[in-house]
Image (cartoon, rainbow, N blue to C red; front, side):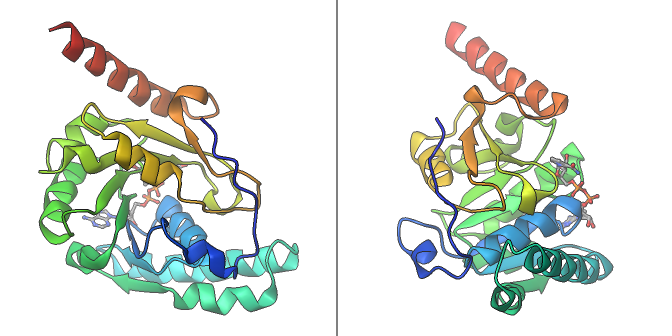
Length: 228
Ligand SMILES: NC(=O)c1ccc[n+]([C@@H]2O[C@H](COP(=O)([O-])OP(=O)(O)OC[C@H]3O[C@@H](n4cnc5c(N)ncnc54)[C@H](O)[C@@H]3O)[C@@H](O)[C@H]2O)c1
């Protein structure tokens, strides 16, 4: 189901109204992580951007600043939106900095062991209501969720590159992902240059083969579970 969210000015106060999420944690400040942090910050969310590499964090901030400049030049955002967006992003090098986040989006390197470790660690430091999302292209959401004590609050959010420009996010449920988690994630209006942001996986084909593979695997796992 597509959520029909109209684009709004980046500074619009309404973007912070309930039931929207408060602080967003982003794990990994690489190509995808910097785009995700950029997009949420531009939409008024305070963001904690976490990477083990301080160089990656510095590069991400410089990339985000450059991309915001480009958006200003193209007339996508007002010039006054740039500095407030940058100011909403706090850098950190340890996952414990995500403790205040209501939503954490993991966009670290595509390594199953790394993601399993990260989710186990995140589960320890965030609040019980926090939703943990992964941007993985190929790893089972169910397997990642199994490293936590909150599999019902773990979900796939597969952003497209370049994130600030792309209208769609593939939302991938794991076997245990709850309806409430899916509803919260799909109701989070994050606007980009394009008019529509969040879509449910079932109705989307505009994604990578790897991500489709993830989706198919989730469906197979679901089918296997229900046929036992
Ligand atoms: N690049 C794409 O087009 C694309 C598209 C969709 C999804 N993805 C997925 O997004 C994720 C990130 O991809 P990317 O292209 O941004 O990778 P990238 O290599 O650009 O960035 C990965 C970042 O993760 C950081 N990292 C590694 N270990 C970490 C840890 N323990 N804690 C915090 N940070 C850590 C690295 O330092 C690096 O900065 C992957 O799962 C990938 O499959 C990528």
